[in-house]
Image (cartoon, rainbow, N blue to C red):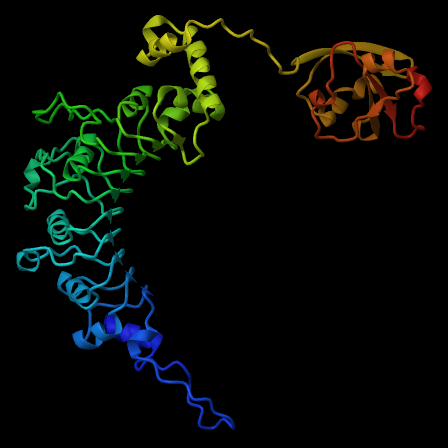
Length: 464
């Protein structure tokens, strides 16, 4: 398998030549030879190249001296010594993507005794299966780190103590690690991606907040979190039961909880207590499958419960008018509920808006069943009809009255109100077999004329 140096030379040339030989060309233009390292871009991407090591240190340092962003995801790197060798020869790198390299081997203590890479601010370790002691060692060696990606690493607990975990300390019921550490590990980290891991306990997630006290952005979407209540399960020993779900996140501004297992409005109320939270994503919750409301109504209830959140589910900033309407709708929604079901937010909003009069209930849906006069030749008959039936279905039900099959039938709709006010307005043929009757704005008292396709079209005078 190639080294990083060999993969780089395959892509950009071993000698940095820009132009092919021109000896055989009739006219030659002299182009000064560029330095090999100038042919390597500052943003270097070498994915899927089977890279398993750094390569010659001097040559790599010469070529990569100006590289600022290095993306070597989906390669064959498995030893941290090789990763560190690459970093040694790329001193200006600020962004490093190592995703989908199998880096589950532990970092040796001798490799991480002191900060070594002051420029690296963004580190991507998705699906590397990097172990927690190695994460701890990296954090100590990267003092300028601002953004860290640890998604898809199959973590079931969080441990930033820097020590090997005793599997006996992990709860068999909830997978929570019975090790509570609230000391900060890294003060500079602002953004953490932790999506798609197996952590289900919010107390484990809270450890990330304590480890990174200035964290502003956290993504824990697609994790099986079932509650934000930090208390552990009944089988765990709880020594910090008084802590709240937001205590670990005093500066958190963005939180992604999409596709988690949160299933009650209590979880939304807990989110409202996060002091700095301004942007939130909560799509794909089991709660939404249980709430009998439209997406618009759900949004109103969310906006009303989250007074400090400015952007919801990736949309634009919530306008003042929408928030006011949401809060009033929230009050009216819970006015109809028993007092025991009303959340604290209801009483807070009553203090702001006062007690509101209920809105007049106006049902804008069409009547489900209407009485229609059916006329076929000299025969007339009044029938009750379901307006959600299709024209085709109606024809089949009129075959006995008409005396001929539905395939030979034509129907004409006569709006009684239009006929009385506009006597020269003719009937409307009901041509489309899949069209539902309500789409004609059909109402009780209207008329439908049945005619045969074998006859001439009925005239306007027949309905005058």
